[in-house]
Image (cartoon, rainbow over the protein chains, first blue to last red):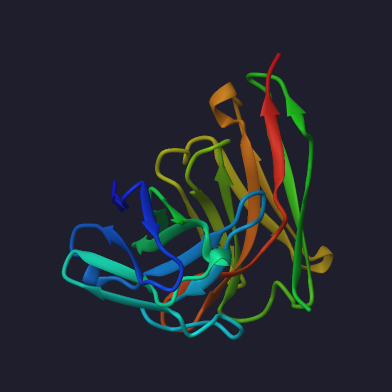
Length: 106
Length: 121
């Protein structure tokens, strides 16, 4: 099976940049999505096809993907960005989610 | 306005079969390059993709659950149904349905509110 590995937690100060990695074998050959899930809520799509932001998602969220690692970057992190973040890719026709990263804004 | 809503039992017994329905509105299940996926999340744990079905009736299942899971759709009712057989306490989770859209790749752009299913005798 195909696995996507994320760091369990990332801490960031308000206004600073948070980077969340997602690692998988030859991940750069696949398209990666990122989802934000706040406590008690359903996930929300924030990045699709590596770098694209859906309508309504702030510009401070950006994505990249190369080699074995995809990265979600939150620039100028705000308190409301505190949430769990999941990467996701497709292994053929099978969906795979990352292990999830809890972002804490200190 | 696109919405998805899950419905089904909140409590099932071990060995029973779970049947969940996802009712969509604001778009049609016959729309090209769109489908519905089921995704679950055990309490305090990560998301897990289970299955999807597309407008052309393409279906795909998680390898780890393939022998237990079935997905189907009724376009006239705007419903997608997931069945999971031989339920176990480890299947206790919030089950989400999500619209799956395809541009170059596929992504889950709208999610239901989720329904918590507990497996217990």
